[in-house]
Structure formats: structure tokens, C-alpha cells
Image 1 (tube, rainbow, N blue to C red):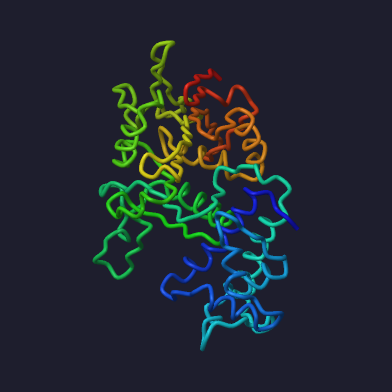
Image 2 (cartoon, rainbow, N blue to C red):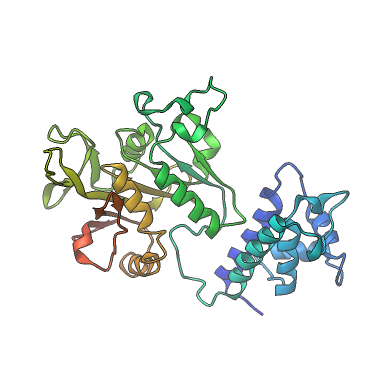
Length: 355
């Protein structure tokens, strides 16, 4: 079966990424993998395997070979004592789950009828770096103390709900790629050469403030406002002037008030650090807004319709949105992009679109 060029390249990248990144310390060569895939069926020459991984002129392997790829990379035991294919019945339950996950991913790349279809969190190649804000020390619990025996690294992270939601979704969408999450103070140069997903606002994430300066073409900024003590608001400054967007509170019987609507920001651009990678920002005035921005593109109840809207509205794939995030019973509801009320502001490069 001949694949469309872009579809074939996506598959070739996935195969190469598996060999080079699944076990980066193994230095698995094309010749070794070809020998392993030859152990049960007709021989695979190293040159043939090289053509399957070629990004300039890829030749797609048959589905049976993709299934063998998935089985090989389902278990590190495939390397011992030398690269070989384990029989399916010898896979442990966890390895079998990984086998089915990889097989579904690779066969999906082979059989997809819409190679131009784009999902925001589906990537042709990795790695993917998620940057999450660090919780201020005064907000942390005792398990965030590295000197304690029960230290838990996640206790250092703010926006944990959003982090777990987006990390799990990206891993499911890209099972063959490396997906890592970092605090701003943990970042290294290599992290910026990846696809970058940035969570959280300028109050708790200095990296958001720095990246906000690097994408000055977007007319949305997050700024402090003396009237709001719990977060930083969004400001839009464009040809129509300046507008500010605030959360909505419902005054409770005790006078403290309850957050009933937050504001989320979603930005997707070419990365300012690596032109072949992307930058995605999911931000909010409060953590409820951050989670709402994430779930706009991960919640199975709305994500397909929302992705269709983005493809139709922004065919180049670059955009910035401000959205309403209703908060009901202390839960963030996922914005529905089909609903005009949910869209506060829309922008695309060289084009400004009012919602």
C-alpha cells in the first residue's frame, strides 16, 4: 500500500524515534533491528529497514512488520542476549499492554485516511517538554521538603491537575515519543529543542513571563491588576484598543465569594527556540482556568469538535485564544469552541479575529 508522502514521513519518523529514543542507552543499530525482525519471517535487509526510516524517500513496511516493531519495543528483554523478537505469549501483562499500545499507534499511522488531519497534541517526532510552574514555598505541604524521607517531587508543582491531564493525554497520543515534565529551574538547553508545552501564568511561572516576551506578535499579555488579588488578568492590545478580561465571582452568603467563571488562554505557534518544533501555552488567571484550557483539547466529550473548529478556523495551525471556563461545584468545565459565548478573543498571525 502506497502512502501519501506526508503520511509516509510521519510513519518513518515514528519508526526512527522508536529505535533511537525508546532505549537511548542501547545504541540499537538498523542492522541489529533488521536481524531481530528477520528471526520469524522472511529476511529484512538493513537497507530495507533504512528505507522504512528514511525521511526523504520513505517506503512503508507492511502491517505485519509494524506489528513486529511493536512487539520488539514492548519489552527491553528483546535486547537480551542479543536483539530478537519475543513470542507474544512470553510477554508479561504490562509488556502485552505496551505491545498493543504501540501496535495501535503504528497501524493508525499506516491506515489513517486523513494524513493532513491535525490534532494539537499529536506530534510527528519528539521529544516533548511540558513546563509546569513551581508552587511557592509558602503554599507547599511537608512532602515537598527534599530532606524528608517521604519527599514527593510532584508536591513541588503547581497546577498538578492540569499537568497530569496533559501528560497522560500526550503520552496516549504519542506512545513512541519521549514526554517529560520539568519545573522552570530544572530546564536545560535540550528541553527547548523539543516541542514545548507551557502551563500556568506569570504569577507562578517565570518561564511564562519570559516566553511572553519572546512571542510579542501575540497581542495578549498577562498582567497584574490591583483589583484582583488572586491572579493576573489577561490584556489584549490591538487595533481596536485595549481590553481586559476578568474572572467572574458569585458572592456567597459569608461574603467571601465563589469563582464561577475563569479565563483560559491557549496559544499555538512555531517555537521561538527551534523553528521545526511547536510552542503550546495553556494558561489561566487561576489554576481552574489552566485546567480548562488543557481540557478544551483533551476532554473526550469536546476535543474532536474543538480540534475540527481549530482546523477550519486556523488552517495554518497557529493561533491564540481567550476562553471562558465555567466553574461548577468546584470543577472546571471544558470550553466548547462551537459556542460563541465561550470564545472571548481569537487571533492568528497577520489576522485578528474577534470571537
